[in-house]
Length: 152
Image 1 (cartoon, helix red, strand yellow):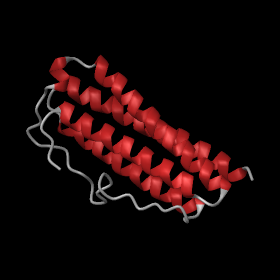
Image 2 (cartoon, one colour):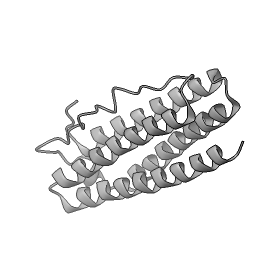
Image 3 (cartoon, one colour):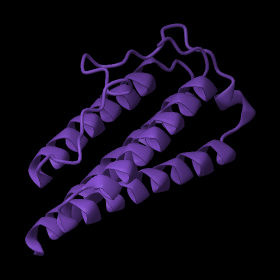
C-alpha cells in the first residue's frame, strides 16, 4: 500500500495495531487452553498500549512532521505483515509467539524503512522514536510471554 505523508503512515500503523489487538482478543475468547487465553489477552492489551503510545507521539508531533510528503514511500516487507496474520485459537503457545515475533519484525523493518526514506531530519527522528518504541515493546512482550510460559 503506497503512503503519501507521515500522517498516512501513522494512521495505517495504528489501524494495524488495533486490528491485531482485536484478532488477539477474539482468539483469546476462543482459546481452549487457559495459558493461551491469558497470553492472547495480554497481547491484545499490548497492541492497544502501542496504539496509545503512537497516538501520544502523533499528538506531540508538529504539523510539519505530520504533513511531510515522502518522495519514496516505505515498502512493506516481503511477509506483508499488515495484510497477513495467521494465528488461530488451536495453535500452541510457541506457534503464537513465533507468529507474533514475525509480525513485530515486519513492523520493525517497516518503521526502519520509513526512517531511512524520510528526507526531513525531524521526520527521520520521529520514525526512529517509533522504531525504538516497537523494539522496546517487542522485548517486553517477549519477556512477559516467557513468564506466561514458565507459569503453569
